Length: 357
Ligand SMILES: Nc1ncnc2c1ncn2[C@@H]1O[C@H](COP(=O)(O)OP(=O)(O)OP(=O)(O)O)[C@@H](O)[C@H]1O
Ligand SMILES: [Mg+2]
Image (cartoon, rainbow, N blue to C red; front, side):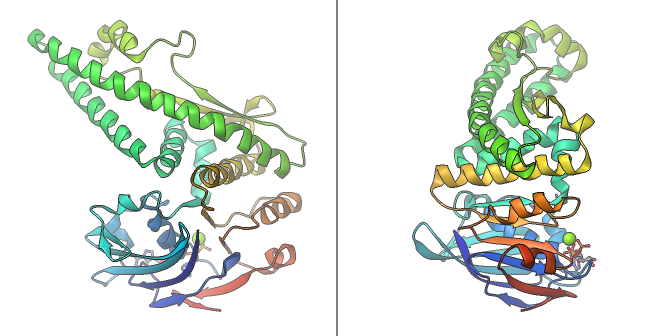
């Protein structure tokens, strides 16, 4: 897919802007705090996901403004389309003139992949970031996964709250059996979907990393299931650990405890990786995610790269810019010159929330 035209009003610090991006590389440049990331964040919301900065909807509306509205004209599924996103209290979306029941219904309609410095936490932080990465990727790929995930999370909340209530109420044990059953059906399906996804992601990310590092380093991804030694069905684990769960009032096994291992040259990138290696891992994951989205949907996702070049040596920068052909890319930076030396692109200067070509 690619975006033909974007009109933004009232979004964060952005003034009323109209943008006609190139179908190839678009370089969004300017000094710090001018609105470059805000623009990428605005585009990303059309993926149907929440802000990649973890912002709440209310924070996205410009200070002193009543609402934010963005209109996006894009080409996808072999036709010109239009989506409108309005934020007033909450987010609302229309696609080709039809109001959607939720902005999440845009998932799978406007495919995008984003890299932001916030994604370094994918490598550096605890397992929840990596689970979220897998879940977000799967939600775009298969909208039914979002339903499965919310079914699992609901069952987990119910089970945990029941574990808290059981003390002194043994008659509730039977109810726990029911929630064990619900949780394990959804949980096993989640684990299965994540493993299948990882079997696609691993070779793709490893190939990107190989290119980034000039074949000097090797990336390896693994799905780490808390139970990997015995691979028991979740229901059996829940039963075996019920006593422990009752004591701790929380569920100790399930996909909400799993992780994705990211190793470079056989050691954990989180613990031993250099800044450039950690950044390269996050970029490899993101570019691989985009590649799989393309293979599965036959639609080239729009790539949003926020401040991707810093901390990367010339070889790695060159690899990124030369492996984005045939895709629409939005890339932010302070100085466009080094990027323009490596590839052709349309430039947009962002200054105090205004954008000029
Ligand atoms: N809801 C809002 N209303 C108005 N302004 C906002 C809002 N949220 C953030 N801002 C402003 O937007 C500016 C930051 O924009 P942004 O993060 O896009 O900067 P940037 O150009 O990406 O800068 P950097 O190069 O430092 O990453 C800040 O000045 C901030 O105060
Ligand atoms: Mg920024």
